[in-house]
Picture 1 (cartoon, helix red, strand yellow):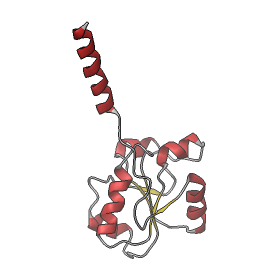
Picture 2 (picture 1 turned 30 degrees about the horizontal axis):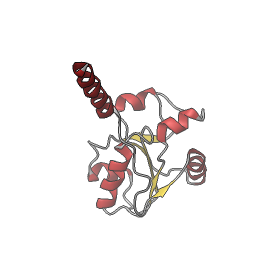
Picture 3 (picture 1 turned 180 degrees about the horizontal axis):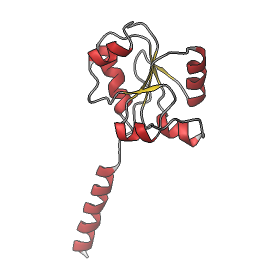
Picture 4 (picture 1 turned 90 degrees about the vertical axis):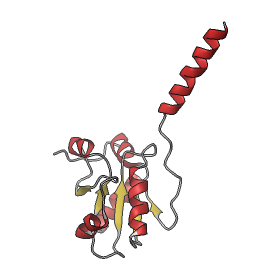
Length: 138
């Protein structure tokens, strides 16, 4: 019986380790938007950069129209400057949703490089597709 308990405990800790953490509820000085608010911003600001912080393989399968693939771990200040030279311009970031930290990381990098008008679509790709909003695939 003791062996069964040890096995059960070790399996439960493995399961917990596999769960992805939640993205933070907020990021200081960053506006958080829903899918509907993101659409409104995109329509009101044609040409506003939309940064998809997911892996290229995910981006190719589907993304928000106009989004630029820029994986958070590979994003450099120079990459972002090529897309958005004006550090005061609005930039919308997203990744897979509330269990994805890629856009959080990308936003923190952008803040560190002096970008000030950052918008976070926290619900990301999961919220977008759950609401059957239009997508583009490469």
